[in-house]
Length: 152
Image (cartoon, rainbow, N blue to C red):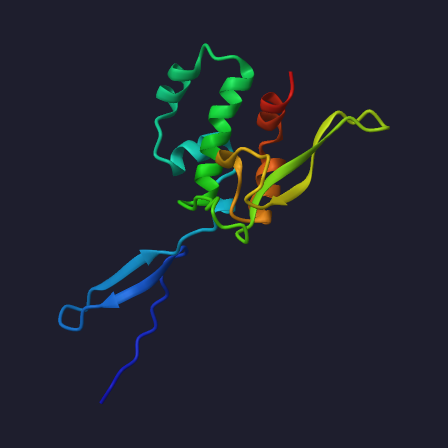
């Protein structure tokens, strides 16, 4: 005789294993897409396990462009989740957000799109993303930080 019992895991978790002798069920968290986990710069610090108060203390006297550069390096690191560009591989795509400065309608600085560069890039390697989607998302989400970095 066999019996079946239906158990639904809590939201955000999945079954990993069941111990047949004790009946213990092991659950693991379902990893969220990095774009769902990062909505603010504070989220970037959390993903990278960086103390926010310490970061503020270390950067409190920096000019806006230098603070922005430090923030962008961390943003790229968090979104790339360990990926680093291989600059010896010209077929590996490397992406960064593209911005538009001014417009006929006076729109000012705004996120425009993304650009793919190969190994002969003129773009700083610390600030490139592993995918076009992440580059565009980051440019839109952190547009004000990019503006501080790229403009006077």
